[in-house]
Image (cartoon, rainbow, N blue to C red; front, top):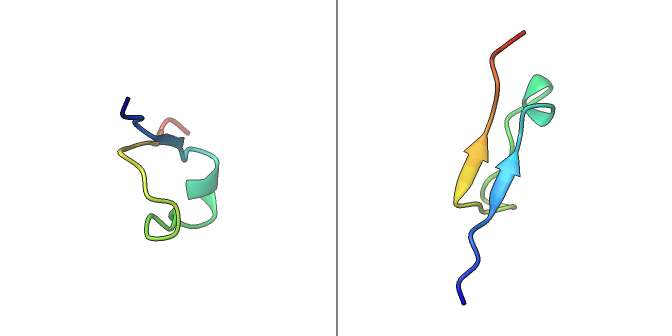
Length: 34
């Protein structure tokens, strides 16, 4: 089968954006709550 990759980048985005060229993902979740 085909796997889909989701990255939870909420904590990582606090310091810098995730490098999607190094870690390709189908979906990226972030939160602007705080």
